[in-house]
Length: 621
Image 1 (cartoon, rainbow, N blue to C red):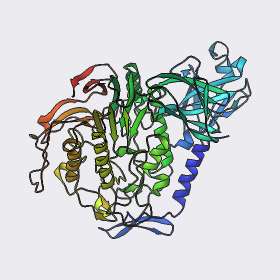
Image 2: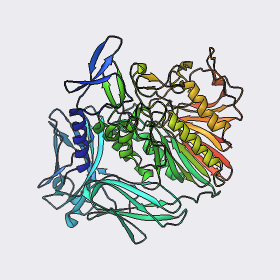
Image 3: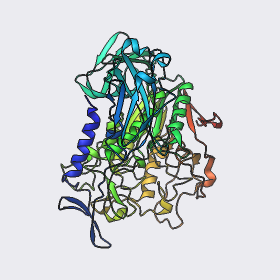
């Protein structure tokens, strides 16, 4: 069976592009004319047709399953214009914690979208370290590279036979540990065909309920803070790794966790850009975090280049990011959040763009949720807010799996989405959509309620809040984030009308909740700016434009904001801003943050994962 998941994604995308779908009532200036979606340019009084095009690279094309042949496998990318190279090699899993292909000295050329690999000729005899010629089973790892050297995708395929060869069920992504608690974890992975798969833990088998390509298997009844081996079984194949359950909620025993953001593709060639993500730095971070015994990793936004109009293309970029985190995520959770680069758009000429709809099928939020497994304890959506234009219809995307919280020991992490319903268009007031960095009303109310809940929870000593955009930019995003050069007129627009609060007013409402309404909130953790910077917010800080005519927030206690968007995206240097004298540390090096929680104390060590150079070491609390 071919890759059911990728075919379904492609068919849904084609179907959505080809047919008329209801326009959400939260949008304005949109209509259908002759079957085409159009946007009205009010300035020039013209209608602009939606930009619709097939991406050159996509999940369904480059995860095309190899086809077994008499002597090996062949690839057909269904694109005669595509030329390049496939590097390949055998993969061993038995007693290997971090299986990777050992690339053979020769490669296969892609000509007119096709390539062949002769396994019998190339990978037998002294090159057969799997003994496949006896067992009739092998895993082939491969890397698809364009003619100019750009790496498009790393894949693998399971084969049966000694010649001829037959493609068998293959694990395409994962396994990944997620939803970690003190008595359970969940394990998710993807296969190339529908099947009932299982996970074995301590001689107990946990199975899928039905055949699927997307597997989410819950392991229950475990002991707190205990390590377990687990074996994923799919068809006649298996892989064994390990995981550890979380410390019990309320435990004051020490633990370490990791943080970073912004791994979209960097410069320098090679693995610094495996189509959409800086896999080189991400792999370094994941390896270092595991070596330093981090219990989990929080990664807040801009995992990929994004800004796509095609969910199929977005899925390819997400797949490359997920391959890069495997060194850590097979053993411990990597909890991810959305940034501005996770957007999937409907676009029109003149840079007009907005979150893709229908929201429940192909929005940025839906595709993100389809690719990751996060808690489902966040708010529902912005439906029902005072600006909701209708009752009963879906006018906003879901917050499920993109705004959420989790606890570990005596700390709580609240994950926000500051690019919800994001409209990248620079002329946002001409239509509708949310602003980069703007937290809308229902999410704000949920934040307030969640903070209040943890303030009353005697098991929780430390609250961390993370969102992609900082309250106070320091290098690279002074013209947006929650500042916009001091322009408070910037805000979300619903049905063509501005919401009540501007970006700086909304920033102050968030800070009031975190600082003045909470004694436990330790800091705000951000990304977006491609550097590492730590600053202290207090009542001496200049935080308003010169012409500010609205109430000013009173800061009741010193509060830390840390921005770490240094996971591989192109760097930004420091800018001079009103609060620059409150910046304690600024670095353009790639930076992995390692927090150590020791009872009521919080320590931070920041390390360059490429060189292990110490950037700073500080006691936060």
